[in-house]
Image (cartoon, rainbow, N blue to C red; front, side, top):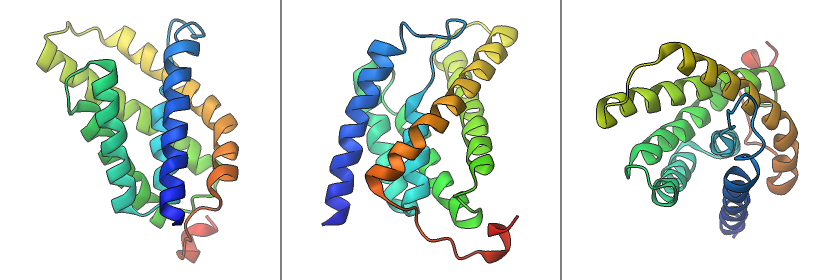
Length: 174
């Protein structure tokens, strides 16, 4: 019963994030760069739930994004499915309540996801390679995601409760 409630809450958060992403952050940009709130959502799911649930939720959210945004079906689905799985796996190894660890994971996840999307765009859509602007945009987006994560994550914890237990005592104190 708790999983069904959590799925409904995740679905409602997805709708809210989609609304914010499309309506608010299209006009509220930093250097014409928008954040990717879906990375924060999948990251938060990965910290809270096990690998399978996080991966499935990433696949579902990515699939809906592919449908709604109109990009090629499967790109966001695979990227967000992998992000859910990797984040959940990392949260079992690392202490997920450490804010610095979470910030670093958001930062590097954003960079890796944008690199993968950029490379796929180059190969699938024949987009020209513009490394300097890509690096600038990706860095700004990663910083933007971190700032929004710091604001959004406490709200997420209120909605869904405590993260999964971490039994790795050694890494917990690092």
